[in-house]
Picture 1 (cartoon, one colour):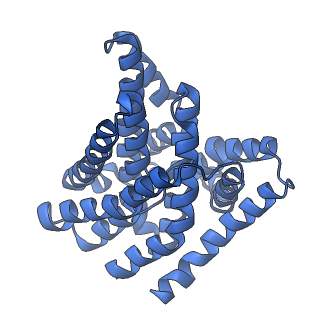
Picture 2 (cartoon, one colour):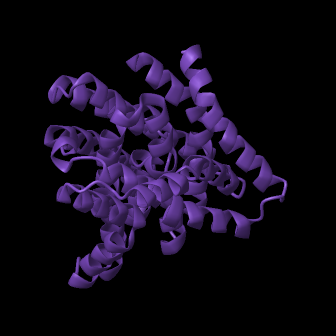
Length: 307
């Protein structure tokens, strides 16, 4: 495990630097928001576009892989939902807690880290994980909260979900990349070089932005944050591992990437949604902070166990 910890330490060091910059005020909340916007709309999108444009969708799309991740993640989602309802938190809070328990920071942390740790072969599986998270679960929280408030799931709710997917630059980049790949024409040299140059900023920028954004997070309600962090860092990779290895018999490398992605800490966009809808933002904030701090060791442990 020590070897793996040494390999992952540079990634968490950049997160720590970002946290320090934000905590000391050297990096203001406005600066953090601007950096996050740059990474989200430009650097990370360029990375995903270049990756997908150089892949064949038929080689990447693996339905047993999708089902293994979807079912494993759904199981943890349902457990977290049930626990929240038993605690009488209501549908909206249960939806937010379930999102914390099941959705990891695949975009900002998973894509750059796993691509560098496991090599370019990991890009396809990571993008499948990201697609399921964005299309299924990011839509589900909007449907549950909005539908509960409206008393029904209306066409307006579904329209909001569809618009959110269409406006998500990560989804757009992946779709455009695979559309270009389908033409069979290689990316023009200058375009590929420009995307490579811009995408190179995604890894340090995303990691620094994660740390800087954590500086504004609180560590209140630690009991709930601890439970949700346990779900995300332990139950989620365990459930996905059972599905991938014991049920669907996914090949070893793809299963390793999938399980490692499932072991990532709570995604930052859960806080954005919680704040937008006014549902338990401090609870989500604490869960992101606690799970990210613990993931320094848990992610390394999962990767080490997987070999």
